[in-house]
Length: 334
Image (cartoon, rainbow, N blue to C red; front, side):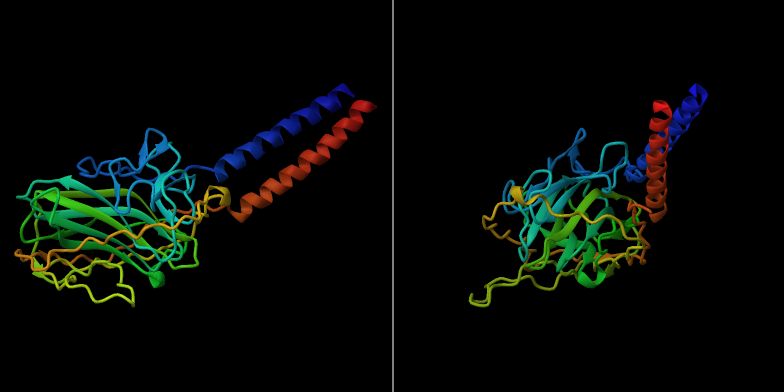
């Protein structure tokens, strides 16, 4: 009898170990490649230590107004810290503002650069669910306070090109402009439809300049701006055609993964969110800014959804634990 109980105990402990190992595999962190060392962006992963943070970034609508934070296993991370990101969605996530459908949201950062360098590099991790538009626009200026000239739109997403909840990373995108700037503004924009709850998340933002300039060609930039209300008069100044770089071809997601769900209802305030003021490019830019055509790239989408095989294994192991536990209890009573 003692040998029988001992054998059952060994089998039970083995099954529990396998069950825990399977659970660990399912909940593994979404690890991605670190960003290059020459990144000019402060806080590219939206965190301080192991906590989510918007340090270094500015919400155009004001502090804790629209953009919030996310921290979850499905978010990309370059190390063992649980993935963090900037978040535009219903509720306040893990801190920050409260997303609102139909509202233009701008999150930006100004960086200093060598004005003699005209080759720009960029890449980012992004995920969208329901989205009117999500863009990244690079502006240049001779002053950290502007005025700003739009020079490049490396990412431009709408509902037809939404990732549908799959985290996607652009490849390393690059372009050459005719003349460099001492300051650049990296602007993350998003607007999701009224009546929806999920918008866009960004993380792993990389921007740099170098001397690998290529051929410069002339084209135009389309900057995301909020349409004026129907009842208001037409504005006296409006964005006009710029000589700059066209949007880079949008990468398409390859796999679906976990979608960022809205924060708990208790954390959601029903207060109205003020609309962010769009950044206006210079009306008549004096620089002719041109670009190097960038080929379409294939993204590498992260997928951390639970595999059906894991679910079957876990269910079978749980049933074995129950059966062996009952048998063990009966044997002990004998």
